[in-house]
Image 1 (cartoon, one colour):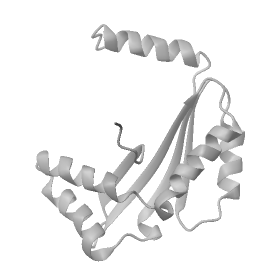
Image 2 (cartoon, helix red, strand yellow):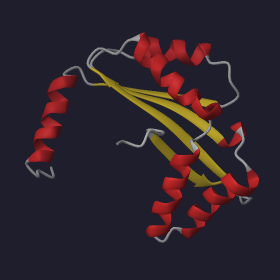
Image 3 (cartoon, helix red, strand yellow):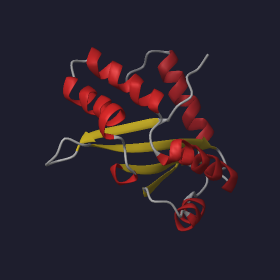
Length: 146
């Protein structure tokens, strides 16, 4: 059973205080990206009141402890247990990877967003989207590190 959570969470200690900043990313890939795909990404970002999910943060904290990154693990734990997380500490980003031009879809999404969380969008276009994905999988399966 897969654990449903945020696609990507970036974390950093904010300078000058003990608080932590979060980047909540929803990643979407499609040969032909459309409005519905971006709408799905927005719905995912808006989940948990736009903040990183608690189970994702708990998972990250545990992995950081295993890696000896106690300062970041403690900051995540304190944000969840003591301080809380505000919209000002979070930036959301939609990352799209597609064979067609995502600019219009991403621009429409950003212009229609009415929430309190800072927003970013990144669209990566590879015209031969499906062929690129197949080549990456082939390299991974063959153990090719180039």
